[in-house]
Amino acid sequence: MKTSTKKSRGYRITIENMDTENPKSMQLDVEDREDIFAIVEKLKQGSGLDEKSATQMGIGLRLLGPLMMQNRKHPLFTDFMPHFKTFMLNLKKKVKGGVEQ
Image 1 (cartoon, rainbow, N blue to C red):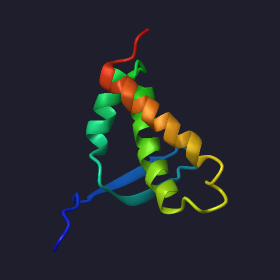
Image 2 (spheres, helix red, strand yellow):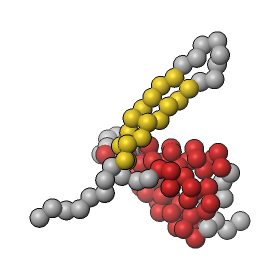
Image 3 (cartoon, rainbow, N blue to C red):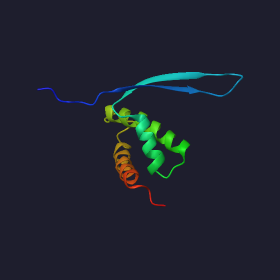
Image 4 (cartoon, rainbow, N blue to C red):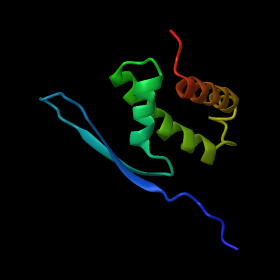
């Protein structure tokens, strides 16, 4: 019996510095089961953050979260993992209900 799983989405993240004298860039290809664009939109609408901050937060969380889950027993993440889980549960609740200000 086959279990149904969400299809992964591929993303390419590009970082470019804006130093015209010494321009640098890097790219990172990642797979994610979540729609990062939809997450960012939800954060823009329900987090109470400005558009730029909501975008940074959405992308950052989707890069960090799955990495931590894959490496949850790694010493870099063991102390932080319970706090991250609490933060994510709280964030999801607030965004779903809208942040009260």
